[in-house]
Length: 349
Ligand code: Q9C
Ligand code: ZN
Image (cartoon, rainbow, N blue to C red):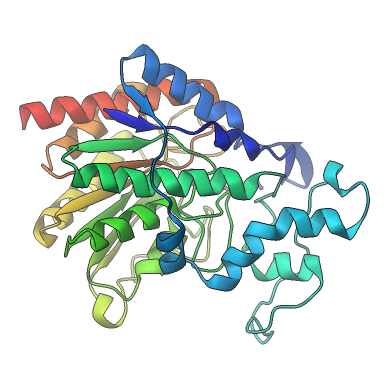
């Protein structure tokens, strides 16, 4: 399978995040993509650089003022005070209910709060460049499907599925899966499905497509009553307006078994088939792995092969986008298990 990879990913490398009140090294690190790339090469997959500029697609899934903020955020931070290059900006105030989010303040930290859903998505020098390369990979993958590729894998980071039209969150800045889905729509597909198998609900992707019938969004995830992102991902979120009926959430209790997880995957696959999807974007989070340090599902490496095989049997062209997964050294093995399983599933039907 063709895998898209850019060295630019490594430009996003914040040092620490907050975890249980403490500063800890970031779970979402450059080593993640490096381990995946290494395993892709070992298994004979073809690595290519992204070739498409995602700028026009980004303008269709994100707001102009959010894109403008993100692109200059690090420069604005540096301009604030000498020495800021060695420090990480974090938001400390947010426009919750009754406060205004229509006006962008001038204060940098206030702007950061306006455009961030949490304090868990640190910026660094190069965050924009890394995230942009990931979005370019998503656009390139969709383009390659148009040229007849059956499936393409975006080996990119930072992840994207928590990023909404005008906010970052959950280590995500630009919504790569949304870029891929939008590109597939623009290429002429009338029904595109996005299947999000990351441990966490894909709140950003859901919100971007919530009122659209041309993109079906399905997410399998830890129940938001106890799991991040907490404020979205419930079963009663089924879409709005023209999009009513085109959003499906399958929340599972924390600690859910492998059997329970695959039963939910069957429901997702049945809905994708019923919809008559013409192309599929998979938000491939690998944090459902039993050894993930911040999640509670129980999948083993062999289960990722089974996942890939089931997706291959759908008979659709697929863009795979890497999302979460924090058992860093196992990430390569698990990602490639999905891709190899997919190729086996396509072959066997
Ligand atoms: N700050 C993805 O898997 N919780 N994002 C962190 C400590 C947020 C995960 C808790 C987890 C976000 C793409
Ligand atoms: Zn996740």
